[in-house]
Length: 258
Length: 265
Image (cartoon, rainbow over all chains, first blue to last red):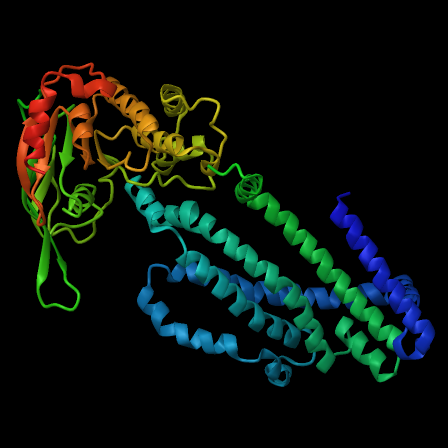
């Protein structure tokens, strides 16, 4: 274990201790305590409440991420050879990006009902724009000299996309995933806060409405844990797929860059 | 000299104009350019900077379409102003080594050298063996699995040259490929290039702005005029091969060639 990891654990422990101390001082009914929260999470785990609600939120997040993110990922590659179309739709996408999607939650509920699809719609509307912009930037940043080299070597448009444009854009796509996936989970929970009868967001809302601080904090803790696990997963995938950059970064750190 | 018989590549009255921004007039970058390359020749092309040398190579490589004139390859027109869509590299017949090495950073050295072969669907057992040979010939053995950023500038340059040689195009264009290298690796890689050329019966058109390099490498040197570029003169480099590239200036023919070329650049 590295020194940084040990220090992080120590820092986390200090925060938890401070919280526990504050709870003992102010009374657990107003700010709860880490032990109470853990206890609550354990109870939810045993009776299946945690699994079913967390599963619901994660499902909404993943569905929305895929439904919104996939077109956001594919579109920039299709638009690459059509600068005119890109120029026409660019301002519309910019406006779409800027719109506060949360304001659409009531409309999504009217259109898609209070079930999972209104949450999916919110997550999809957030994911699309984030993934689109990042991927677009990646596609635009391809080195034209590499493209020229590949064309002279005889590459068709499909081969160019696969062997030059896609690998150049991949770091940008990853950045998009890194930002969007945690936001998707948060987005799904936010949609549940407003109207739902399931999900971690619903648990927060329901507990808070009954002044159960511990319950609300336990649901928030579960959300935080899911986001953390997701981030670790993305990091692992990142290191594997972009190994060539990893080596690059280490080389620079060592100062052995030619 | 192999100037008897039909030329391999024939550039006839070639011209290229670009629209000048903010003006109604067009500017000719290349105009009335005619010369021929014969099978197996190493021709160096020298001209003042900004004289449209890269534009010329881009037209031969079919990255650009000429505004007038024609380019013939083995008697067939491969590029003229009527071309609606250029096919860069002319179906693998014309290789192009550019100023930058343009290695793909996410592919290791070997995969970079194999790239054109893979794209053209020709990466078979024999092609792989050829790649091995070339890697060996330029002293890159043991570095096959290195990524471009882990290699020195000279090594990357070598890799980019053998990448083009590996798929065996009959004509190779080179646009000041050694400009960014230090003197030592430059000399090294020049002699590598000459030995690769001698075993492969390639035809090379090599653009440079260095008169010594033009004399050291070429069978023939073509000088260009200032913009718009056209052929100003041709000089047969009658220094016998093998040449000592590091002491080319001591060849008895050198002073005369140098001053004649110098006068035209």
